[in-house]
Image 1 (cartoon, rainbow, N blue to C red):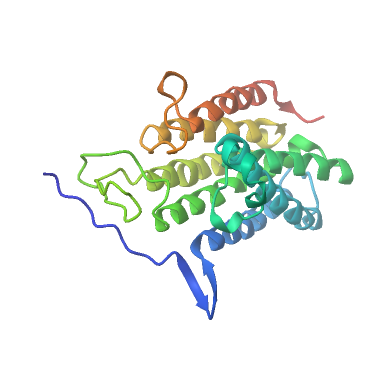
Image 2: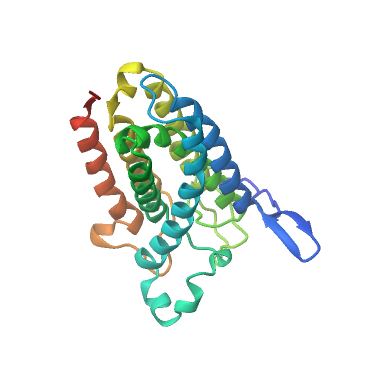
Length: 265
């Protein structure tokens, strides 16, 4: 038998004050939003500037609502529509878990579009700057998934396989949350930072947005080959998972945005 790495038993609750606990998952969201906000504030002022720092500050509230509402509704509609159809009162219960990146992405896109209209900002130019900070939250979120021992990988016979305490089968599995943290977080952030450092790329409104969408879609498709599919859905068309099926259109849209992007007038 191959050796396995012991799962690091980290308490999912980071801080406990009496009956109230703050989970690592919540801290991941908070840290991701704060770090992305500070980065976007700087990038938005780089040539060509697309927004004032105060406008980026105001957008944080819009983005937060887009993430929470879109992420929750995306999970309800994409992953467990049958369950919530008969238990609609559980939809607002986000503390029980269940968020979808694809839904959260749509929520932020809608929020950004509405905010840009209200502030008379260029939607794609502003979206490009927001896109640079998104991988920070993605990476932190995947690490939180790992701490929670949720969304673990498929059965594996590699030396770094782990037995997750939440797995009813108690078999060695890929730590796919860490794979995804590396691809969707670290690798994608590195690519976005390199692209955003080039004035010629920043001037092509829509390119960075497309790069993020296509990059995430590609990373998610690859990551899903190692991740255990959702128990209530399993494998779908041609053995693909729901995450892969939702990511394929993202790749197409991302390539389209990069291909049609041109320097802002």
